[in-house]
Length: 52
Image (cartoon, rainbow, N blue to C red):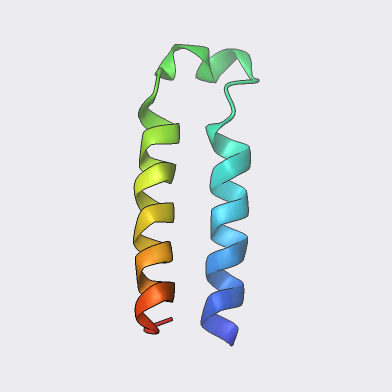
């Protein structure tokens, strides 16, 4: 249960960080949200396989 809690916190932090709301991050493009999408797909696959 502890590893899923840690992963949930990391995903929430990635969601906050992927939002281009700050001036220094406006030029990043789709990089952060694309990376977050890949992480979420991997987590969903692991959850469905019962490995997490």
